[in-house]
Image (cartoon, rainbow, N blue to C red; front, side):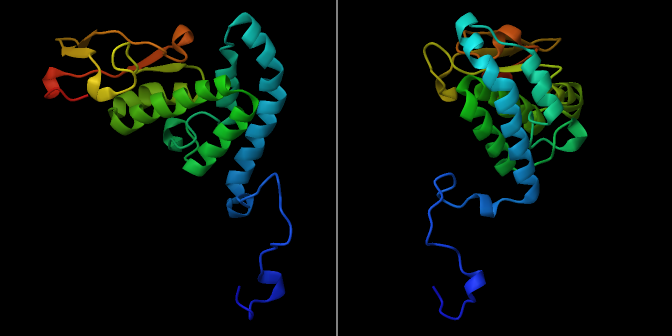
Length: 202
C-alpha cells in the first residue's frame, strides 16, 4: 500500500466482515443497494412465510408473480418502455440472491420469468412481440415458462430433437420437453426447437 495515501483514504483492512467478506457492498451504486434492500424485505416478509406450506402442498401461488411485478423484481434488465426497470445485471443478480436466500424454488420461478422468457423475447422477438408480451410478464399479470430440456438431450440445444415446422399460420411443434419450471400455471411458453425453414438452426 502506498505510504503517501492519506489515512482516511486507505481501506480498512484490520477487520473482517463476515456478512460481506469481499466488500462487495462498497462497490454497489445507490440504486443497486435500493433494489437489493427492497428484494430482501419482500423475500423476508412475503416469501419466507410461504415456504413450508408450498413444500407440504407442492403448490405454487401465482400471486407471487404479481407481487414481484409490483415490486419491479421481474425483468430487472428489460428497458422501461417494455415494463422493466432498465437496471443493471448487478441489480438482477442482487435480486436473485435475496430471493435465493429464502428459497431456491422461488428464485427459479423469478429467474425463468426474467431470464429464460423475457430476455429471449426482448433480444430475439419482433417489436410486436415485445409490446404484446413483455409488459404483462414484467407486471406478473402473465406467467412465462421455457421449454428447453429433453429426455434424450438434457439441456444441450445442439442435441435436441424438437422441431418447428413452418406452416401457413405459424409453426407446428413436434417433440418432447421436460422439467419446465412454471409450466402448470404459465400463460406464455418459450419453446426451443430446430427449424428446417431456418437451415436447421434453433
